[in-house]
Image (cartoon, rainbow, N blue to C red; front, top):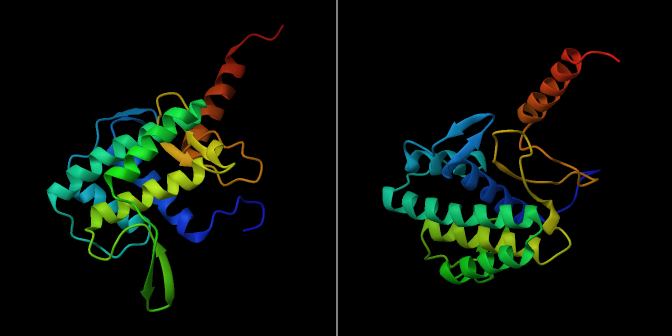
Length: 194
């Protein structure tokens, strides 16, 4: 992982989950087009879980609705941190920690002990939401709060976690970065030379 910010593996995983949930479940803009939110929230949650390496889950509609609501609140954290309003971000994280009953716990797994922020009896949605809230809290409570970002491309408000060495990431994806570079190139080509 040379050249990248080193979040521990659990924090990296729950921050990646936070990004997936916010980007797949909240309306706004994505890649230059309006994104009304998913047509099927349960499938979007399942797709997000698969994207972060979770085995193909079955997600109930009630759970998908709950996670969609929590993803909207996670978006507030990313947007607030990105704009430098860490007080607002922290207030929302604290509320998420309370609402999900997040608590650190070591659970015995096949490969040894694993840190989680939920109990073994918590459901899928609350378990992931509690972990995401804890991951966001770990980022905000350290010098990594500035690594939570919102895409700078026009008509895109998807979020990301900047793990680059220099902390200068501005876009959610290479596609958005390319769109902005191509538009700048077209603008330079179209302007008269003085």
